[in-house]
Amino acid sequence: MNSVIVLAAAVFAAGMGTASAQSVTDPQIAAIVVTANQVDIDAGKLAASRATSPEVKKFASQMVTDHTGVNKQATDLVTRLKVKPEDNATAQSIKKGGDENVAALKGLKGAAFDKAYIDHEVAYHQQVLDAVDKTLIPSAQNEDLKALLVKVRPAFVAHLEHAKHVQSSMGSK
Image (cartoon, rainbow, N blue to C red; front, side, top):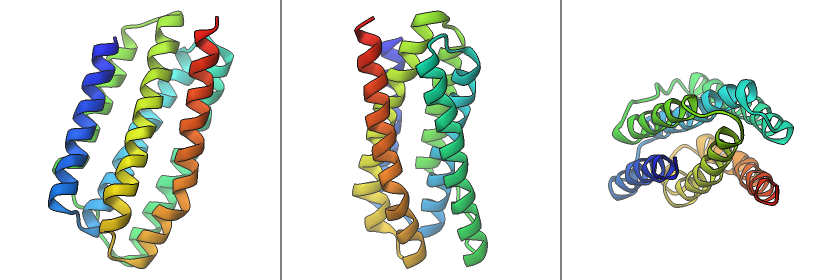
């Protein structure tokens, strides 16, 4: 399973590397943000229903709630700005990695599922933060879009720290 996590991380990082090299437009950023959130919502829904650890279930439920909220804010903003999210290689790469992660998780049960989900969440949130800091915020041209990215960044930091905490508590069991 770790190879699947590494593969998903590499796919995501490669996609973000492409975005960074090319720079991304506001419509592309909108698509990336919505896709990245949806990927975590999909994994969170699966984990909330299949995890055995109460701490993992709670974390997964929080991911669904928080990322649904971010997607609502992003959708409201792009609607107000009349910006149509533009599909791009980065968003497609994120979606593919998310689909592969969910497929791999579906093949696991019990503690193996819990560990794989949390390990992926740690890697994923770190990569999202790197993308937000190095690509999305610097590339955003619209001030409202940039402000939204800056506003939601602390939530991604908190998610990463929470995932690391859950991960470390699982390692001691």
